[in-house]
Amino acid sequence: MSLQNTGFLKSEYRGIALSVKLEGKTLEVYKFLVRRGRPLGVREIQRAIRLKSPSLALYHLRKLEEMGLVERLEGGKYCVKNYVKIDALKHFLLIGRLAIPRLLFYSVFLTSLSIFYCTLMDWNNVSMTEVLGLIIVAFSTFFLWLETLRMLKE
Image: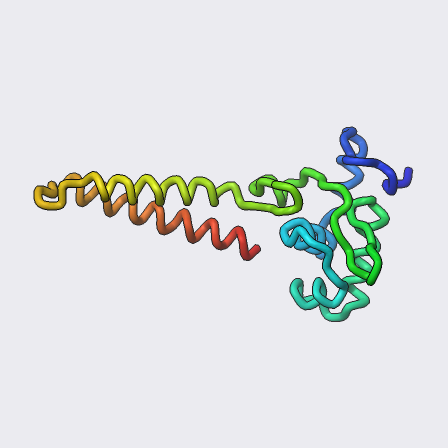
C-alpha cells in the first residue's frame, strides 16, 4: 500500500507503517523541518543536521515526500505537508508550523512564580525557611530551563 495520499495517517495500520519507515536520519530530517516551521532548502537541511552530502539530505527528503509527510515547493525548498504524532515529538506542542517544547510553559510559569514570591517577601525579616525555599526554587528553575534549552537544541 502506498503511503502518499494518506492525509494525517490516522489509522492504526498507517501508524505502524510509518513507525517502521520513520527512523534514524529520516526522522531527524522530519523533526528538523517540523521545528523550523518554514520551507527549507536541501543544503540548509544538510548543514544543520550535519549530513555528509546534499544528495543524502535529498534522499531522506524524497523518502519523506513518498510517505506524504513533506512536499517540494517551487525553488527546490521542502516543507511539512502532514503532521504525524511520533514519540520524538510528543514533548512538543505544535502551534501552526511552530514546535514549542512543553517544558517552556513550565519554565516560564515557575520563573514568574519565583519573581512574584521574591517581590512579596519581607526582605528585612527573612527566615531560614524562606531562604531554603528560595534556594530550592532557584535550583528547580535553573534545571528546568536547562532541560527546556536542551530540548530546543535537539
